[in-house]
Image (cartoon, rainbow, N blue to C red; front, side):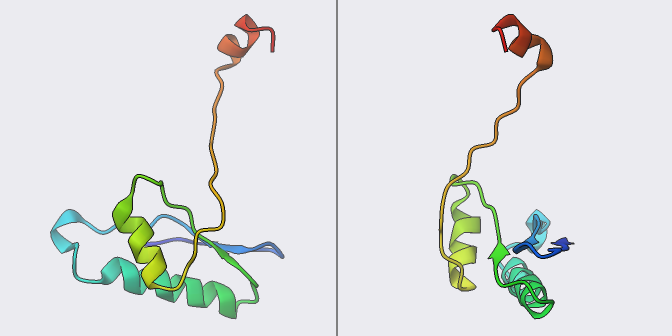
Length: 89
């Protein structure tokens, strides 16, 4: 299962791919990731952005197998409004 996010002039993105545990190891996620990436490119996006946690060795290996390369790392932070106020933010 995967979700293709519309690109609206920005790089296209493939959203999370999930394979139920009992179906893993059969190439489904790789086929879906490759198909979604191709669909995003054929819709006019010049780039496809995929995110995988650095700790997810399987996801990172899959992205490399379908032709992706690591470009940069990102960190997502969330702040609780009350906590931020406690620290003068």
